[in-house]
Length: 97
Image 1 (cartoon, rainbow, N blue to C red):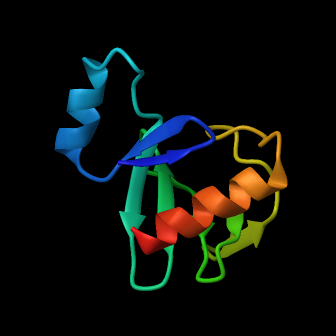
Image 2: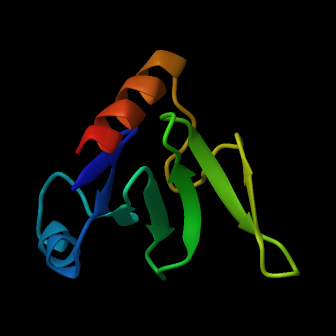
């Protein structure tokens, strides 16, 4: 399970289902650890963001031509961090696994 800004992202369907009965809250989406990055998806399985290999949290927007646009915008499912250093630390921890 990956936690960013207090929001949980399940790494499997089992983790997501278990979070439904967890008193600390339900997952807001899914996370998939790749070789050098982490892909974040919403509950419907649509890509909403990425933590790139440098530990930067990027919002993902699908363009009309099918390609992806990555920006430093806030991701609604995660919300705005109160401290940039908290964001950096959580993203680096997510990359390390």
